[in-house]
Image 1 (spheres, rainbow, N blue to C red):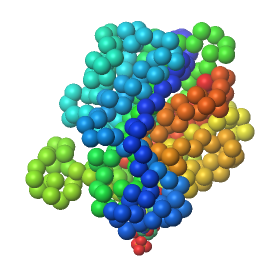
Image 2 (image 1 turned 120 degrees about the vertical axis):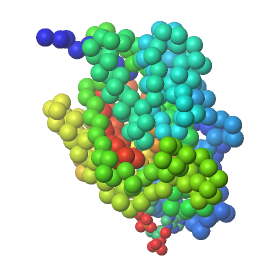
Image 3 (image 1 turned 90 degrees about the horizontal axis):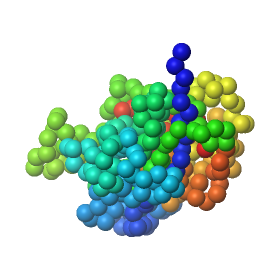
Length: 331
Ligand code: COA
């Protein structure tokens, strides 16, 4: 019988670009209003990078902050996973670039491309490798620079997203009170790939003048359809891991849903029976930051003193793929 080692979150970190883009910015470029965006999404403003910033810049800053909280040096890391769909380059992975920037010489580094739940996917992969003792200290980042994938002529997508990065450092638990990742669930349904996708820039439609003239480098989304699947998948995934662990929703101290739309977050919390005062919300100030959404919200809640050692936290997410997933951990 193999004993699974306890995997705990030793530190959290995040980095949000300094440029604040309020809803009023979009009123000037598309037919929209602050009132429409606020009532339909809950978003008031979002952060966007300055020209020249790339995913590894944001990820490196978020990671440095998580390493500092964990009191672990980059040289000690043996695993780096970056959850992102907006890598610096098509190759190599942003993981390798972050490894280089941090000086994490002995780590193996790679990316997980799973859209918004990529952080949960990364956590699941790290958890498995650490539970069996393959790796001892891991860095998992969720980050995205969605702003340069947005068509600023398409009002149904450009108002929704923002940039950012969040990170956690994982280690093995040293006994009671040290927290533990109890469960992770990751799922996908490729039949629904077309609901959110970026058609151009990959091997199907490589970069070309025609592709760019047609705007195929931008996010295409059927928002209404995504909305329905988001609620179903987030509720199912959260219920699945709670039941696996024999935990009921009244035992949850904090709920971190994917910060895509306050209406989705409210319905999911209600269907799970979690009261609004236990829901961590950042969507009003950051919009949908895709893979960054959960680790950024987690880091802010920890630094604000909301999430404390020993608290039971549920987080879940959904996104392009479709992909979805949930995690339950004692911080
Ligand atoms: N400003 C003003 N009107 C807008 C608008 C905007 N920014 N975006 C869309 N509209 C219009 C539509 O064109 C439509 O007009 P019509 O009735 O004349 O055709 C009307 O608003 C209603 O559109 P609809 O799509 O039904 O609105 P909605 O209430 O579903 O809200 C979303 C749209 C995108 C906010 C919502 O569907 C959503 O959040 N979906 C999930 C998307 C998501 O989270 N994606 C990321 C996954 S990680």
